[in-house]
Amino acid sequence: MSTPVTGSGTITAERTTPLVELRKLTKVFPVRGGVLQRQVGEVRAVDGVDLEIRRGEALGLVGESGCGKTTLGRMLVRLLEPTSGTILFDEDDVTHAGPRDLRQFRQDVQIIFQDPSTSLDPRAQVGHAISEGLRIHGIGDRAERRERVGDMLELVGLKRAHAERYPHEFSGGQRQRVGIARALILRPRLVVADEPVSALDVSVQAQVLNLLKDLQTELDLTLLFIAHNLAVVEHVSDRVAVMYLGRVVELTDRDTLYRHPTHPYTQALLSAIPMPDPRNRRKRVLLQGEIPSPMDPPSGCRFHPRCPIAEEGLCDVEDPPLMDVPRDVDHEAACLLRAGPRAR
Image 1: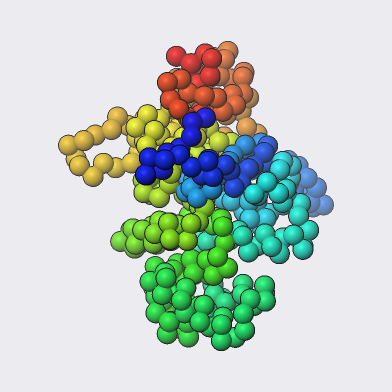
Image 2: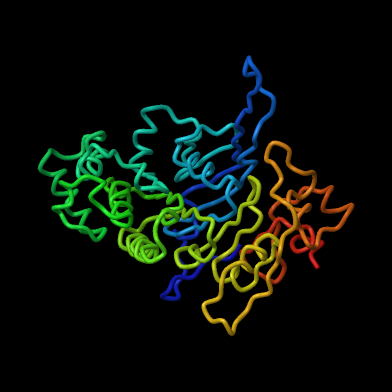
């Protein structure tokens, strides 16, 4: 892999080292049925994902609904227990960390939930909700916490007086700003943003995206940005990982992905993005069939039943890992025909 170059043209080794490493991370949900609720199957929501998040970067994680991206994010913040695999945070194994280790981990890693209306307690003033993490970790006295909450509200574009209001008194965009303030109040090193703009009006989405990007720079955050909309991810991410049916199928920097998508699934996703200039048109890639069930994934490449270039006897037999894409630097794809030694 290549070493990224900063805007000043100098190479920073610290930026190339991963803050988070996911190794063969897997989450299996049992499916139960019948009167006795016996297990009749299992859903492999995340299936053996290897992924690194570099310090200070914004990594976009995209894919259709049900591909496992939210499950991956929740495992990363330890809201879900992994079935197998390893989570390393700053080289420490936190996969099965106990309560004492998790307490410190919670200060370093926070999450912004998708729907601010359901993630905030309607009976609590937003100042109380934002300061909850400070109280739990014993940071500051009441006056210091109140001051810190006011500073954070101003940082996300709200007023100090808003701390006395309840969630229903805010618009959707303002509620999401409150959710961002709550996630950042502990000054975490990593923030998982789980589709933070999908529940907002289009007119408000740009404001929240710009806010997240500004805060990432100002607070030196590492960001995992989860979304199903590739057009949204383009404005936030430094690198992009594309998920399909529990697996990462393409991973590269933002510019390379949008200019030279390699995996047929990524090409189909990009072809669906409307062009702002009607004189410019993309060739639409229409996928056939439905997404296979994660209870019974297809053999070989999981995308082959819908892939327009799949070859019988190859793609339906061999399960491709992420492989280097020829002629591109720091670009990987899970496609036997487009990456690896047999790439064409």
